[in-house]
Length: 270
Image 1 (cartoon, rainbow, N blue to C red):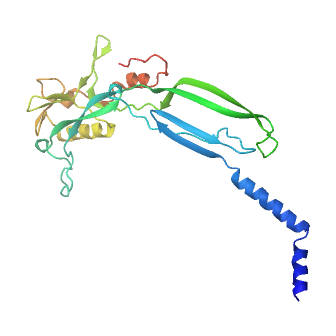
Image 2: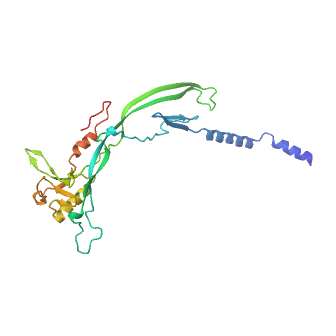
Image 3: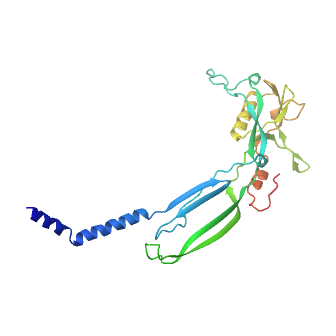
């Protein structure tokens, strides 16, 4: 029995086409698993670096993207004042009662928000790159017979890196014309502390709701902590201004500034 076992063992170690094919397949699978594109990325000192390694038959073109967050400096922003109004509507009105709060219960104030200037967000984008190019020997898996050249390059341009952010500024305006030029009266507020502001909202709906409140209660000007007016020293008579509406007065100017093309020379926005 011992001799038969030894013979069987020796026979199994001999050439076998099936075993050879299995070994070959295994080697190809292992080579394919290792033949991956690897990426190393880092950000240091304001520079982003991406290094890609591609194995045999791997094309790295377009195989990676780079996302970046951009912060604006205070010089690229404006401090805007927006109106804050108390609750215009009663939260739980009695059946059949007016849904609006009386003028003496509504207070007005201001909030200040730092917003981007109406201008394109441009950046100088510079790309330094090194490409490893095999001039001979790429047909084989082994790199021992490769002849390699390294191509270095630099690309630099001014790019618009983000859509323009243009905060809207809605005012309640009574249109009028003087000498053929529009000179709108803006609904304003003067507080009991002497502070004045032209009512300004970031949303048209807020301005329209305030206008509906004024018309529903026929408010003559006095509110909880000051006076609303269209023309200083006169009662707020909405019947005199049928064209009163919520308007974004500077829309054309702001959007024109926001959609200017990027250039190497900074553009002065109004």
